[in-house]
Length: 148
Image: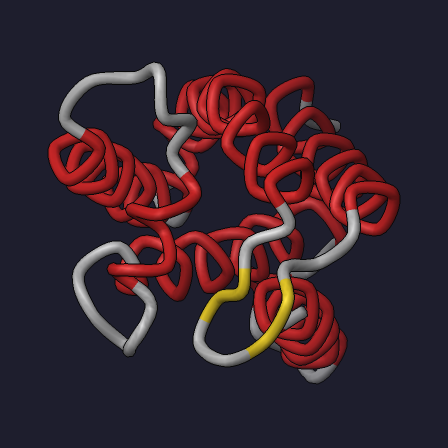
């Protein structure tokens, strides 16, 4: 739920900044880029700590090799994508790449939900809710990728 909250709050704050006169944030598209960048920075950092790394490793489907490496690589890609979203010249490419990354990582969400894992003393988010969140995140990355 933290990624959704980060996306919504920072997108709204960036849009308000645009309305208050910050030219670079004048419009929903640049505000959404800031929201997504914040969300992916948060989720990317979770791949390396924030008390979530072991949870993310346990979510990797058992048939995939080297789950620690996969979590590290996806974390690096999320952080790089977050940074690239902030530069107008790379934002569309970053959003397209992050769209593909979200699609590639979704099987881990399905696997975790099907195995009914308990992460950090809490059960995983049910698959239906995870799917809705994923659809929202995909809609946001696609909106930035296709742009205004």
